Image (cartoon, rainbow, N blue to C red; front, side, top):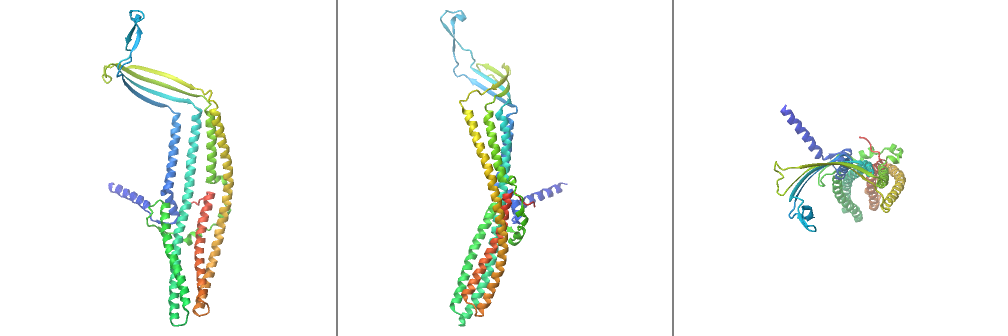
Amino acid sequence: MKHIHIIVFFLITSLGFSQEGKTSFTLQEAIDYALENNRTAKNAVLDIEAAKKQKQETTAIGLPQLNAEIGYQNFLKQQVTVIPSEFFGGTPGGFEEVLFNTKQNATATATLSQLLFDGSYLVGLQSAKVFLEISKNAKEKTDLEIRKAVINAYGNVLLAEESIVILKRNINVLEKNVFDVTKIYENGLEEEESVEQLKITLSSIKSALSNANRLKSLAYKMLNITLGKDIETRIVLNDTLTILTTQNTVLTLLDADENTENTIDYKIAANDKTAKALLVKLQKSKALPSLSTFLNGGYSAFDNNFVFFNSNTKWFGSSLLGVNLNVPIFSSGKRSAATQRAKINLAKAEFNLTETEQKIKLQIASAKSNYQFAIEDYTNKKENLALAERIENKNQIKFFEGIASSFELRQAQTQLYSTQNELLQAMLDVITKKAELETVLNEIPKN
């Protein structure tokens, strides 16, 4: 039985380490990982926990409070009081010096207090709930932004990887062309300009490859940061640009309901309005009376020497029950001005909510338009690439048959390379524009 416990322990431990040390991701796995490990996401979780604690803290204000106090006093020089001498049978008009207090005294008291009514406290309870809701909405907003950032970073890595593959393939074709044309030129059957034209194209593609490798390194680092990993971590992406483009071509999303109240930006603006309304109530509540009660009990001991830990020291007990009523009467217009200022801020929050709603409608319409264009552009770029490949292939044949010039071949090759890049960018746009639309709509697919 003991061995079974050990095995279970190591299995759980290994699962924990495998999740923390995960280095191979599909796009969805990368999103899930980032939502747990991204540093901004972790801070958002902590903000929610802090809001919960603040709610508990505010609630506790209206619950019974018990405080204890221990005091000790040692009069280095005791205060002297004078009393008319005639009190002691002395001469009228004279005074006698008297010490009423002992040199040392100690007290131990405990006070139980309870808030019975306070308008500010009631508003505070409501505000704590709203603050918790604000923190939760902020977490939702953070998760949406992290998801979009992961999709962009993941897509940029795939774009760099695909670009490198295509550039290397183009370089192989160009190097063969340069070799073949050089041989033809050496045999006197081709002009030197043809070799130079091809070398210019080859040099340009090699430069693009070097840049693509640098961008790839930066893209991986950006993805690591977004995931919450160390910037130099080596990771492997399991999805391809083609697969993700197909998965993210969802025309039904263009018909999604435009429910602005479901969007996170609207919720945040509505929360702000609610918070401002509570501030108005808070200022008004300050004009109401507050009522509290307390019960106090304690012991005191007095002596000229420090004998408070002796068992025979006499301690004198006391207790007190009281009620406090605080009635605000006149504040010279301070409370009224504060209330009016809170109302002004509430009016601004209402205007902001209306404006936010209008902006969200525009954002949704714009995001749908951009997504639809991305899908259409992707289809168009695929067709263009097929045409550019045929044109380049025909010019290859014509050039080596002596029908087309090197300039025409280079022009066809440049057009092909440009179309290849445009298609890759169109594929990435389909993925990222869908993510933007989902973020605005607050409609995240359930996986």
